Image (tube, rainbow, N blue to C red; front, top):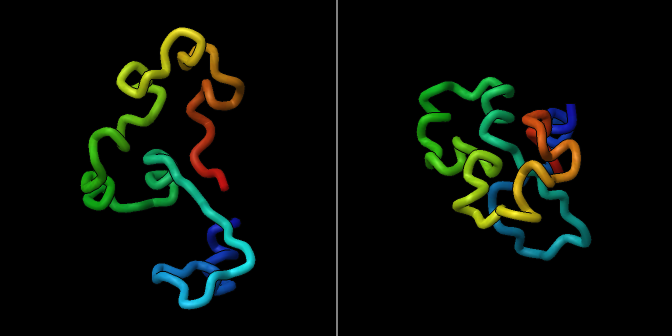
Length: 86
């Protein structure tokens, strides 16, 4: 798994760099992605409700309406299958 490889390669740095690297990799996870990784419910409950609900459920509040509404999104963004991306 990508995350395990990054952790094992000591590629994850929680602190700021002293020297700017030539390249970086950003990884984003959804709330359901964190759940699938096995985060404890206590930890999951600590995230803001907006993050827990996800972008599709909050489309109107985020301004994703009309031509930008979830039913117009490209695959696979319409589904609940994407939980990690970089």
